[in-house]
Image (cartoon, rainbow, N blue to C red; front, side, top):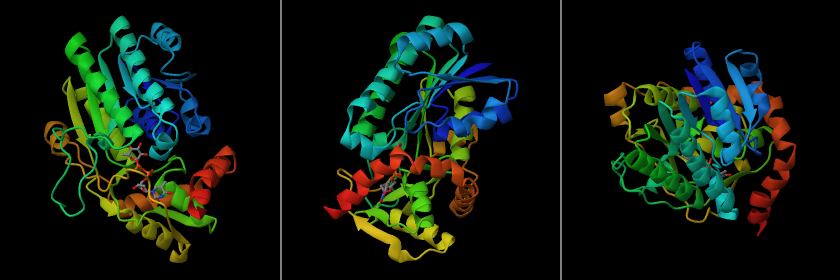
Amino acid sequence: MNIIVTGGAGFIGSNFVYLELEKHPEDRIICLDKLTYAGNLATLEEAMKNPNFRFVKGDIADKECVEKLFEEEHPDIIVNFAAESHVDRSIEDPGIFLKTNIMGTQVLMDACRKYGIKRYHQVSTDEVYGDLPLDKPDLFFTEDTPIHTSSPYSASKAGADLLVMAYHRTFGLPVTITRCSNNYGPYHFPEKLIPLIISRALADETLPVYGKGENVRDWLYVKDHCSAIDLVMRYGREGEIYNVGGHNEKSNLEVVKTVIKQLGKPESLITFVTDRPGHDMRYAIDPTKIHNELGWLPETKFEDGIRMTIDWYLNNREWWENIISGDYRNYFEKMYVEKDRA
Ligand SMILES: Cc1cn([C@H]2C[C@H](O)[C@@H](COP(=O)(O)OP(=O)(O)O[C@H]3O[C@H](C)C(=O)[C@H](O)[C@H]3O)O2)c(=O)[nH]c1=O
């Protein structure tokens, strides 16, 4: 099969490219990526050596570029990872989130209708469900939980999900959606909590924790997430949504302290900073449906996953040091350090 992976130079997309090349050597993987600040060709260096892999630089919201690729590659499956994903950035500047996450999804699906495909798979997020309270630990997001978004980011992802389901109902497009909890693992861009804490702790810099650090996230090792997507896009039922979660709920402070401890750094680096506006309190996923229908379960315990992740960052310093020594450093200072002083 020919599979177009959009956003394949980003965090989850690149992990997915590697999983597909290894698990399905019979398939051809075409990566379409705009190479925004969060995309990185260095991440795909190994994939580039594989004759079954092709990289194309382009924007999913660019109709001409997308149609040209469909004409060249005759894809069977499209997996859409391409998205602006950072909640804080969406609060600063929502426009690009709507353009890429919603309009980009529309352009891709229109191409699917025009040229015909076997499956369009949308990679979505549990943030579309909003949040859960801390004092009701037995509540989880299921696929029937109503959409209730908090940030421009989650609203844009929810808008895209609604559009995907509308294309299924109205045009009969063979679609599936997965909604995942927070991913962590190799190639995670160091603006996100875990890699940010690792990279800053290694440099003995302050570690910004929003509010009191009580917010809870359900951490999912990225490779487990990728294997779930692989199953759903091949064997999931058309028109269905599948939640993908790790059952690894941790408060942000717990996560930060775990990383600091493993790196042998002092807790005095922790700095409590102004909270994120509209900050979701708790995410927790019930993955019963994907387990019952497709036999998927997360394989990686948080204790193992975080150790592997820290080791990866220790062994791949060049990858993230190149990122944080560039423009991103200025962005970070503006977003966190100045805010902290205010
Ligand atoms: C960057 C940063 C974050 N935080 C807090 C904010 C959150 O409660 C938690 C994780 O934040 P992060 O921005 O890494 O991830 P989320 O906002 O939970 O969203 C992530 O997971 C979902 C599922 C997606 O869909 C998003 O695309 C993805 O970015 O740590 C801090 O306390 N300090 C910091 O410096």
